[in-house]
Image 1: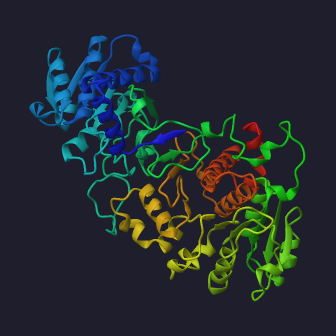
Image 2 (image 1 turned 90 degrees about the vertical axis):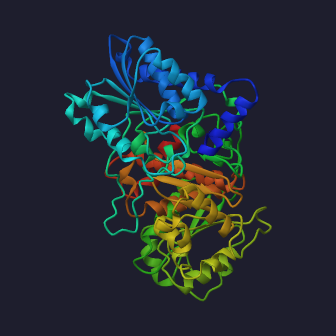
Image 3 (image 1 turned 120 degrees about the vertical axis):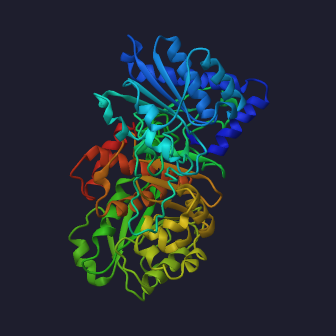
Length: 552
């Protein structure tokens, strides 16, 4: 398990290490600088041979102190190094100042301005050690221009210059994955992309990745993240497996390593069979109920139902209005079908063994949907199950409460999960969305929403965030080589809702937060398995292949 840290958490870990007496700040800075140099040479082995030129840009804090170490180590290796400092050397923190003084025994410290930075010979490598974790204000104009890639156009063969960022490309808020550039997002002419672009080819961070490496624009600016061990593991959070929900203050990264063998059996309950065990009944793997809309609106529910069945549910039933029976019957085989009139009680159509409900895809927006959601949320565990049923609410089931979200929150329980996209999230939590989110990270916004709603929330996107009411959160980002732009297709969200309902249905399934993590991962892996040209119907059909590749 990889934990994502905030700037405050990383500072606390470093401070605890220093206060313990096991290491000094200078030693941590030396390890960080050496780690960056090692990462550079590992990424670009050709830079280990021959003579090269480096441009090292340092800032007024300890990130700049790392830069002084990097400059010294490169110079000792025979590089020609030009170092530029933003700010006054005498105002540096003590450890950074000590390393500045060591550098001054080898070379000079130049001002960090566009004219000074771009006025020299073309470097082979630029090291951005200006601002690292903790920046929450816009970059000074001179720094922004000096870091802008467009400024390199005066150098011949500028495309060959490699750029490495220490902790993050300067200007990136590592708690939010955003650029605090001072522009007004409510301005009609607002452009979400910065006026200057500071994009690194490689980003080297320390001890653990940070939240902003995976949120928002972070992956675009960082390009590739390498984590360097600086010897403070004993002062961080113990790393464990994907078994229990994250701790209240923890942010967990959902990544491929979670899904490799040996897996906790609760990750995919069907894995318990065929591994020296025999037997099992379809009802042991859960009965998922998916609600469909009227005539011509059943496609979304059928997608969710097929996904739930492929995910391992023992059986899946689609409930639809009587008028839509023929339409759905023409397209469903392994998925069962029952009619449900608008005024009919749910118990007339669903027996007590139904233990997972998927509501919203194609149901229609309005009072009937709202009433049915409240009815389902009122069901509790019976003789056939030892837990309350899972209720996955998506799409129309959420929008139907847009004018009264508190009514929904009054009925949800701990086995409920809401799966909105940003638009649906804004309808339920307008004060936590868009410009109103202000300085909150996406993670903190979803945490607050989960606490308010009293259930798990999965906010969909390329950087999907999952949060539990107790405060634990997870990030699943399709970035750094796992990008799937073709997943932005109609119906993909319906498949995800069904996937969660199917994974969580078996009696032996693990915690619901963990099931949401696994679903987000499998959703992206299924899209990657198919490739460009994907439509939503293809996703459930890729699940068997993906599960086999995981050794299940």
